[in-house]
Image: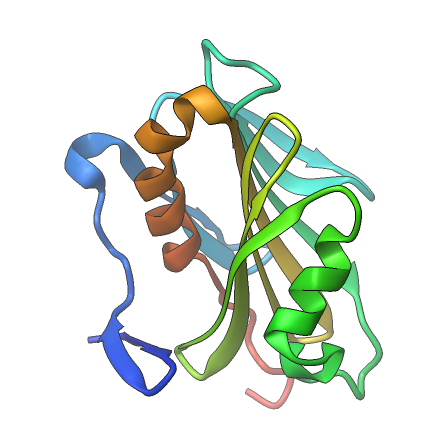
Length: 170
C-alpha cells in the first residue's frame, strides 16, 4: 500500500475512481500519473503553459484541471524550500484569492503542499511538489455554483497525482 502523511497521520493515497468519475492517466514519457476526470476534453502539452489540461465538456474554461512543470535549481530538492506552507499559500493568493486551507502532505516520500483558495467567482485547489529538478503543479478550479459537486472529485484527483521520474542514479 502507498500512504499519505498529513500532519502525523497516514492514510492511503487516493486510488478511487469515484464510481467511474475518475480514470487513470499515466504519462510514462514525462514521468507522472494522475486520476483524471472521465470524459473531459484533454489537451496535450502547450510548451511553457502546461503539460496536460482537462476541461469539462459542458463548462469549458470554467472547470479545469491543469498539470504544469517549471525547472528549478538543482539545489531545490523539496517544496518546503519555498517556505512554510501557509506563508507560501498567502503569497500565492495575495490580493486575488482568499486562502481557505493549507496543508503539507507526504506521498511516496515526496512532500506536497496543498491549498484551497476562494477566487472572485469560484474555488481553486492547488498542489505543488518538487521532484527531479522540476516544480510540479496541479491546479483545479470551478465556479462557486459547481464547487460542491466537484470539490471531492478534484481532491481525489490531486491526491492521486505523482511524479514518477526515475533518478539518474537508477
